[in-house]
Amino acid sequence: MDDFSLSPLALFVQAGAVGRCVMLALLAASIWCWLLIAEALFGLVRLSRALRDDNAALFGPIDALGAQEAAIPDVGESVSERRARVVEKMSRASLDLLAKAEGGLANLAVIASVSPFVGLFGTVWGIMASFVGIAAARDTSLAVVAPGIAEALAATAYGLAAAIPASIAYNRLGAAFSRLAQRLVNRAADRAAQICRDTPMTEAAQ
Image (cartoon, rainbow, N blue to C red; front, side, top):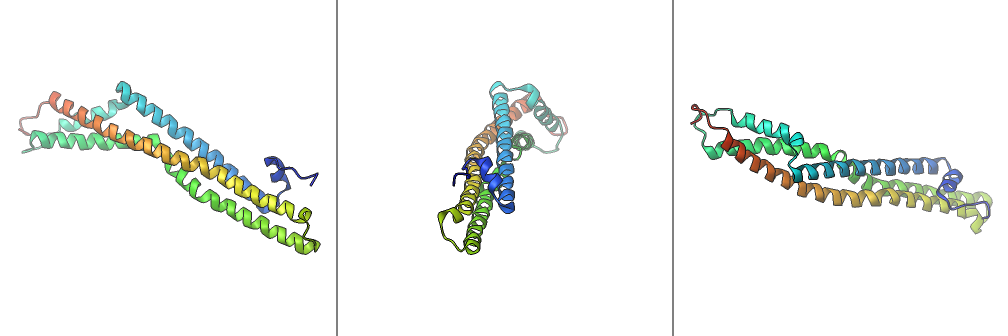
């Protein structure tokens, strides 16, 4: 056991080909997970600040779309029907903006659900390697089975290291974006009402 280390790098170097592939896949998933978290956090903070300050630069296209929709004449349409039409148009545009801010948030759920199974595959393979080592050496001492068991447990740990932050971030960020979506819809309704007041109905619509 003197030449066997429990550091992540040493476990990777001492693992077999399959174990290395599993660890590399889980490392890539972990890096991707943190990139997705950073992207979603950036979008969340940016939209939250824009809502708080009513950033015209960010919401300008949505407001312009609402004004354009309000100016479209519709014969026989009432004031409330016109306002509902503008609200729907602006709400859709606002939710499209939210979807862009979320980025690849849904992929966090994939990482959270798949990574443990990839780690489990590495675990099973490491245990199989241990049994093969026992059969080849005809010895059941700890020195024979330790490398395979260590590789197996390392794969499990790598899988959990990728899955746990992905699961936590997906649930917390998902809840935050849900609250933000309601705020965006409320803003769209408020702005639509103001736009409809500022944009008189045409004679054809009246």
